[in-house]
Image 1 (cartoon, helix red, strand yellow):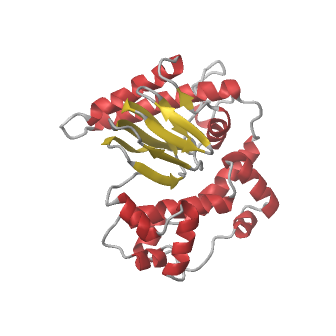
Image 2 (cartoon, rainbow, N blue to C red):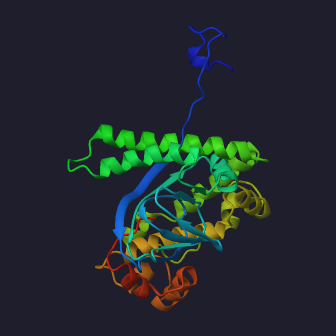
Length: 304
């Protein structure tokens, strides 16, 4: 490894270095819930990974036309952009723990999305490694005290341990990784889309009518539109347009959960010309209107 200039005066070439890491790793929406027979989450998809541990009962999950019947101790990992629904059809009800997480390291994200397994059945070695960590999270939930800074570090450390397990599994299955150049441009495109779709700006005054154009993003990066589309699809598994739709859907759901905001106001904040336009798009995303979704969640906040 080449020694950085500022260290050359007092370090020898035999020095050994650990690689620098600068990843944004986010854990959010982690919660435990007990539900009754008939409980169902509407069909949806997320920009983040979703990790589910069944504590008691049976959960039925449909994911990309595959049906899973999850029993106590089973773990399911749902990848970003995967449409799915969860429900409980058992008389005894269901208790589950769920956590969402995201990682902005694009090569790792690609390997995870394409090569890691999704179902970790109870009793398997990989299941036990992940479950031991998730049960520590559950233990933190059962406390009555305020969470301390050490608690928050332990939560994040648990996520990093899980990511290490998943990385081992995905790397053992990986066949072909994208080049660093492709990964670099894909990440820049994603950051540009997120920057233009500014959540703080939306909540302050609205997104406005100016569309987000991949052509303009590609031009700013001095690459062709075709190359931008190809690299983004290879790394994230979805088109930039779909990625933007997921951002909008995520924000729309968060706004709908706020009862003090009218649906007309939400439509305006998200840049739609009318409530009817927003409702049509929301129905295409979820299969229901914004008002139906608001009634379905009934004020319960499902984290995405």
